[in-house]
Image (cartoon, rainbow, N blue to C red; front, side, top):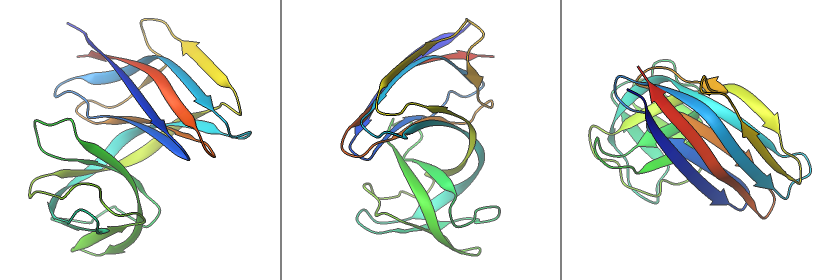
Amino acid sequence: MATYSTKRATGTTEAALLDRGQTGFIPLLIAYEAKSDKSDSKLKFYKGSASTTATSGASGQKVVACSSTSGFVAGDKVMIQFGATTTANEWHTIDTVQAGVSLTMLANLGTSITNGDKVFRMAQMAQKSVGAAEVSVYGSSYGILGGDKNMPFAAVLDGTAECAVDLCALVYVK
């Protein structure tokens, strides 16, 4: 049985639509609408490719202590999932890695880490030029892009003063 999810995200210089995924399911993107004011803006699609368990990190700080840093490098895009049952997520870029100890982000955390939260390395799988325009894409029931089972999915759009991923429809299949 398939389940569906519709998400929205807005921002000034970046709109990051983050989906946690569903245990036991593969996310398929079936439609999206994106709008940006930046002439060369791009909508980038990411899927989770690896994860580690976060052990601590304070809101307003950049450092996330982790059980392992193996495979994470400076410049990686990551999605932090707060709590097993909440929908809170944050999008970050790694600035530095202290091997085996912590990941330092370029920007401060908006939420404090609780031991057991997850940090996912996100691999870019595609991108679509949007420009200073509005773009709509609707795919078949087989989807436009597919992620990996039990992993999160993200759609990130850049802008200068205003951008939005107004509709992102995902279907989850076994």
